[in-house]
Length: 246
Image (cartoon, rainbow, N blue to C red):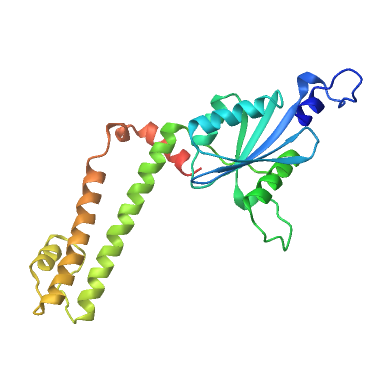
């Protein structure tokens, strides 16, 4: 209540030398899986901690109303992280100026190793106000979906490579060699599918690794040979490839 009276002073009360229509508030958010830590500053005033809120849509809506009640122009920043860009899109839809900053480029004092959500939120507001933050590229919903698909393909290819390496290492450790070119061609795969060990335990381990390699190969083959219809659009792929690399 004291803060509200300070923002909107009565007659005779000393007022801040800032025009009412130009009031500005800078706010920082530190989102994680279960909560968001919020700090803000009004104009050139001290940075204050608003506390922690939940991560549901209704929690974000209540936060937006609280921030909008404090100033006409609100600039919000939060660090890029595993929670994605959903929060950014919600805030932009509400009419906020929002920035997602690069955590690795946030200025830090040498020897300052104490990290808490409260301290980081306050530091983020100060850095935003000083113009020391670097924004990251926020992709559109479609570009983000294409990026997810691209990364999934890369992960599947890496899984297939590791499965092949484990299977080869297992055979080599038991002195089993393929006579010919071990390039995972039809003849090589047929030999692997027909080979068997004398020990039941070794055969079980071999079959498990063989099954994992076969599953990875089949999944990778299906996804690369039967892509979604839009993937055939060369111009669309080129544009989205640039977005994925951003």
